[in-house]
Image (cartoon, rainbow, N blue to C red):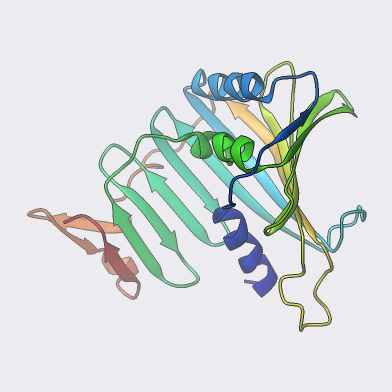
Length: 239
């Protein structure tokens, strides 16, 4: 995996800030709209979202220099995702992460689905930690919000959605600094777009999509890896 991609992914997954007072420059209410987004996703029992991660060298360019594909599938409380050689499975018994590049499988007890599992970002944190919010229009029938941050890894975050369905079209992360300033080929103020290229409601889901049996063998309550993944390292958080 490209090192820049790996770093970008890790940065997005560790989205943290210190709290600021957020300035709202809009007539819309982002809290109400985020609640409508959440309600829209919760009302759907089965959904498949195909995603494309697009990496740009700066804020303005329209030409991505690298792309990666991903998928997220949910059926009620069951969840499956696959991106960056990392699979994630959650069912009624286990929550599991499989890192195929690092050859690590981690397993723990399942959790209730959180807002960030459904929307790919934590709405409460955004509203608490940003210092400015703007409402975006003129987006070809879509609308959105831009969150500005006065310091930290990100300068802006755009969340673009369909105002009719309240399903998210894409999120755009604007990074404040290059990831590796000492490498001359690294971008200055890069951005990443995570685009939901296809959203399927009530799709056909293959059998055992949310099963862990391909990876785990459970005998007398003891968890071990199956022979197909015996060269992976198991991290067991269930005690």
